[in-house]
Image (cartoon, rainbow, N blue to C red; front, side, top):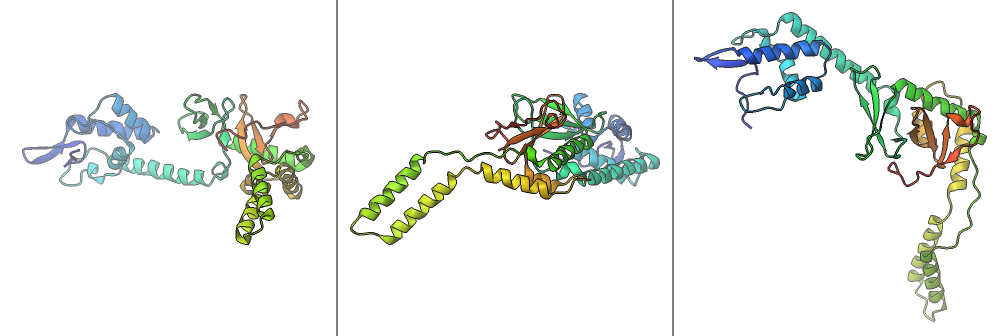
Length: 304
């Protein structure tokens, strides 16, 4: 693609750089929209909808092109360019830009960015993505990443963090909520039986190859370990974590990372927690409507 030789808004007439009447008006529109609170993405979409060329035969406005225009001091009338933007407007634009950048840095320190476990859709249990839209009344929207679903839920970050923290505090106050599971007696897998049979044949052999036997026995031990039901250990570990924890006065991402596998939305926009033992704990577990928590059937869902 051919690059512009002059900034957008200018043209060369008889060897003299002058303001382009149509493009300079677009520059003014861009500045007005930005000062009115519109985002660079929104402005780019607006210009693309109006089919405004960036240069002859070239469309496709984007945030990078708009950013360059808003930061370019040549629009203030620096020789040899004519003034298109007033000093006051330029300074106001830079102030807005700096304020937005500062807000972004502040937001990145907020608790929602410390939440490392996945947030799941109440409809299909796929992961949801957080989208921040400053111009909306509720600025945070969670959208299902499953293209066949795309279910969305509006929930402010502070409300999300508050609900999660309250549920964890309920668990800390009631660790008996965690269900202890009895280890399930299961038959050895086919793979383990084959390994054990091979070991038995090697031991019956008149010539025992010790290195081969040792390797086969290690394989058998490893397979037995894989087939041990981890549920009782996971539940005990979870209870220990909650018993030793102090009630939370602020969001604790570390504790949540150790005790929670995922956060799952409910249709009513409330949240439940899928714990590390796959037990689901929600507000109804403590409000008297349902004192028995359920076990997650989501162990094979998208978050895993």
